[in-house]
Image (cartoon, rainbow, N blue to C red):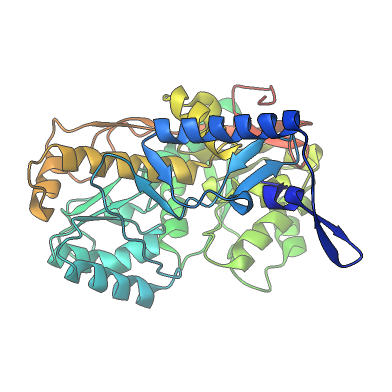
Length: 410
């Protein structure tokens, strides 16, 4: 979000000197009214911000409105919920260390995380051994879909609010075959990433079942620093009309940067399909609709087609802009755990696991009604297909919208 802290409006800078800015009575009233409206809304959500000051109030450039930032210092009002935050630095070793540290603290009853499939797989055994529920908003790999892991180890303390790779791939394959009329596809992925590899495997299976052909090429590894975009497109061109399915794992800068370069070099010629790792500002920063009009992505949630419109409206009001699918699925995990805690008079780790595993359990989240199957996967998971349309009021003049929409979000 682009803007400036309100503190800058209270101080003038002139030739290295600082001086106070003077406001008239009407300006003060207007300023206080906006701030009080923000606080009223935040308090309605049961949240108390503990550090209200000018530097934590920002005026947006796009419309001049004031928004409250830095929610690191908040407490949940009237709810006895304590939250500990741990950072795994997106590294396997640190994810395992954090899991061990969290498991040792007996007052920690459940964990939200880890964001990536690779880190979730690496740390899951620690949570399982310590009978501590792990609920993930981002781990999609099919390795987590069965009753047990591929290693044979149990995983009954694992749940996820995000759809699996199979679900995402099915939607993408069906759209390309049945709506876009594509008969061939080549997939770019990271075979060292559980997330990316699982999507490749499931997409290949689904696309083939729909009588499509997945073409193999030599240069498919997006994460390589020497990924040769020119060579890739020359090889693809020999296949005729072929969709580029681009699945960066978002764990390496090379993967995402190579994906963006591939989109640019394609020059709008081939259809491009991808997952939610391309649903970001880097893609929009290409800022040329001609290069992006044949791009379609599969994601778990979009604010314009949300089954919970109040969540979209409230987050827009609170943050001053639409939140991401990552935020929506993370919110869902929190709602699930709060509901599980509320159902127990004296919550325990085992009690939370039993509550979530109950076939009658459900919670309402940003993405709709949340229920789990017997393997901890999301029942009837939400999936959205999106494309890019022109939108003059957005930073790059473009916006992601649901596939059946051609209008710019207001």
